[in-house]
Length: 253
Image (cartoon, rainbow, N blue to C red; front, side, top):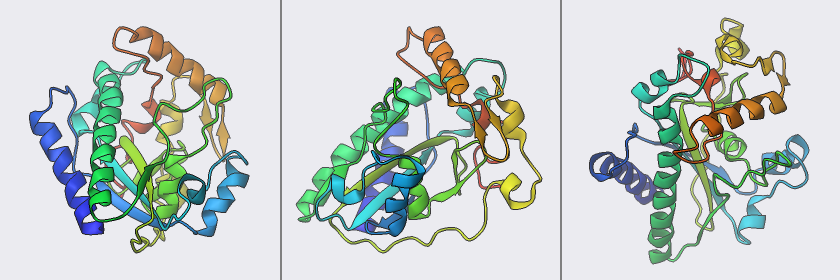
């Protein structure tokens, strides 16, 4: 199934770029896979909270957690570098990438079912509860367990194609060989202390090392963006700390 899955998603993104009426465009996706019984999933109940689901909570006979990352184009990432507010292109990228992922996942479910396998979507990308600031499934952490990348001090998952894009994860009862996790830090600050630019990029100083994150400040800024772009939709986004940095669109050397 791995070969079929990757070919399907890659072709879906290519066709979406060419044929959809979306304003955004995307680079080729990348993939990683985790054993659904990997003990790190249990660890998320400590790291995130007891409310965080396990793969078997999503599918009784779960074997594999699939993760994939769809990078936004460099032009969209670069558009979000200047200014206090997110760029309009970044806001459209937010909405249109969610729509793209929903289309992919719906098609994947049918593809797996034709071969006799089940596939369950983990959590909708709009399912985060802004009141409790909780979500019962973290795409980023599941993708880390699968080996898709490593966390930066901006709390984003840095993949081989950077951090400017969106991660999706799914659970299946089909077995796909797990991907080895990276053995080096992709974040330059964690690797050798040579960066940290993302901290200065935050317009509201919500980040600091070693592990400071003021989620209330961060969320307040995303709501400012949502208000500014309300004619487009509810875009509680920012991502200033993930654009205009060495890890924006590639894994730093």
